[in-house]
Image (cartoon, rainbow, N blue to C red; front, side):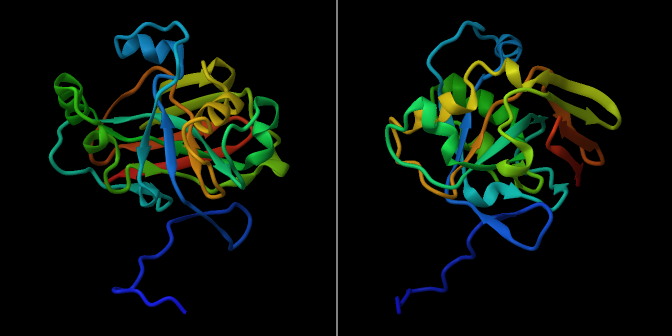
Length: 228
């Protein structure tokens, strides 16, 4: 039996739809500017360019239905995204075999301290302070791909207090899910438990305490989150 210097922390996990089991999370990879309209609204060229990724921490994923407004910021933005859970991995995964490694999908949000992210961009520093904070990735239950099929199209939408703020279609992603897996595996050894957040459509904007967010992805389900 392994002896630890301190009690090991609990394994981060996300509920699985329709049962009591949970999906254990190893790493969280997030792709940036993966919808052309969002690239434009963020002040960038919408043309296809090599993808880039940043990471959130595994325990940033939160299925509680509440998003605590974080400290040291006055400009927190919502970003609705498709989450992809991997059941296996490897290196240099061929494009045509990439979806073989997908276990399931979930509706998620990439909450962002936009003001802090902007400050880091100006100074050429990493973004983690704007992206990888506590409970910064509200998420719904993972649904097995054998139930949903592999999601390559379908409406993705976010309403804040009943008003549509973000809308698009999964087929508008610049880099599709198989391409993300293929690309990431050239730089990292992907493994079971890895989660990919696949980018957000245009319409990102701020939230305040008391706001209610309702995220949906066609063929997958919905996610309700209140800002507290």
